[in-house]
Length: 250
Image 1 (cartoon, rainbow, N blue to C red):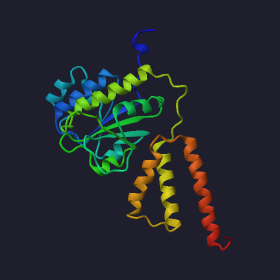
Image 2: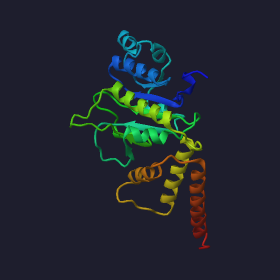
Image 3: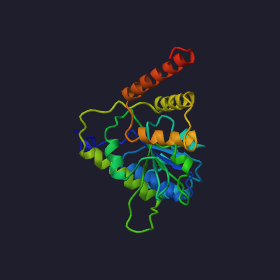
Image 4: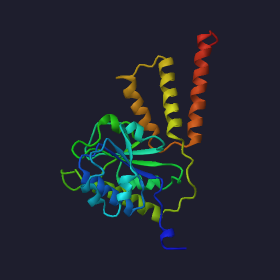
């Protein structure tokens, strides 16, 4: 067995950059990814990711730039991602569970190679928009000493990948979790929303805003297949009761 085979694999991790502005940052991100064995780079509306500057900063990681998948929206880039982590440097009034990179790394250690983790990074000047953060399951914020909390894009990627690599280097999970697919989780959320409408639920603000809170509660830890099935059983009984009431059998 070689020394390299003893190292943890991050083959189920992808890095998603949303509208990166500077080509050099994209190249530096590719270099950081190669440091930790991550090959899945996804770019949303990038600028000049194959430019000379990007290639120069990639430094022996140019193949990641050539093989990067290109998308026109974050929603499309998150296809087949089971657990998406949005990153932000700013405190925001959102409902999404927020952690530091080390917590994210610890949680991710239970994912097997078939369950993909997406680390989502925003624009160098404005970060991720709120509607983009709402597409993510959890949020990660890097703590800093001063009020100047903005960290270079490539540095942020490096910190997150290092923490995940380190967590897997020392972790020995008893078993891997059988996480539900993103599609299965979204089907569950849609069912919850339909039931709320059917019972005439009136939220304090809007139903969309209330559903963000519901997702916050259920996304504190990734849902397994059996968790989703249990929730479907609960809401199936509620739907049955609603039909019975409508037929005068209540």
